[in-house]
Image (tube, rainbow, N blue to C red; front, side, top):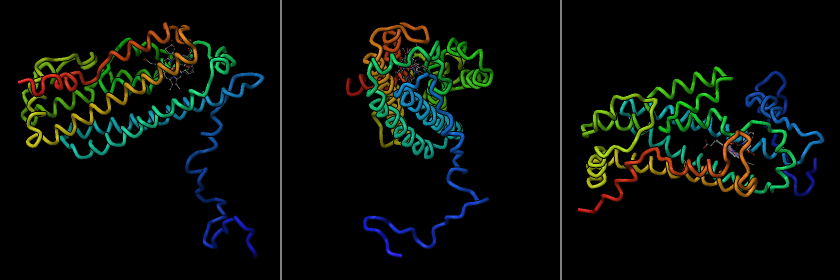
Length: 285
Ligand code: HEM
Ligand SMILES: N[C@@H](CC(=O)c1ccccc1NC=O)C(=O)O
């Protein structure tokens, strides 16, 4: 059979009979995935699908970040650093993906959004259990956040579990202590449901690591990966805040907050305060 120009022939070996066999759509559960976009506007507003898909893809990447960070915590508990470095490299790429994705949603104008904002009711990203889980895993603990999930026992139980467990940073500090670094006792055993607050006793530890990089290469490398992850997280928050500002201005949020002002406050939070503070100390003496 002659092939029309500018068309690729299917090769002989290509499987075309997939009856009763594992197919692409079957493996990936595509009927489930692709039937989960249910715009509520009637008549349908063109841009509501963008809004739904932007959130769903974000939630999928967040699922992977949780999977990766949970594994990193387990590796740290076993003092196994090499897999952590691999995981952090992956997490950083996912974070970049998530941050870059704001540019797609930024094509939504205030007028487009007002066409369907009313259907959202009190729903808000503030109620994202996976986002809260990532914040808890990284150490931004806040028991009050769990109240939002009273209606969802599974999400609530998972968040409670992570709230009361050591965060990635807590486990890193415990690892450093096992390696002989003089980590203050209150960082090794404490009420893990509280956020880590800057501890001046950690500064000499990180000063020593950053001043003796050859002798502390693993720890030094890990510190820098954590800094990258915090910076990336802040970039996501910043892009969210600026996207919100250009789409709804200074309106209150559907979740009931003040909106942009509330989102700006999160930019003051820090997961790993001493890793930033140590930079001021370096070279001072
Ligand atoms: C038109 C687009 C968006 C607008 C206008 C918007 C607006 C807001 C506002 C006003 C808040 C504060 C809580 C409230 O009162 O509702 C918030 C929180 C939040 N949004 Fe969005 N958002 C948008 C898109 C997204 C997307 C695509 C995501 C991705 C999952 C997202 C995730 C979140 C999260 C995680 C929070 C909680 C942040 C925190 O606790 O600091 N938002 N959003
Ligand atoms: N908080 C947004 C609504 C919103 O963005 C939203 C609504 C339902 C599901 C996810 C959302 N995304 C992030 O907050 C607003 O105030 O317009």
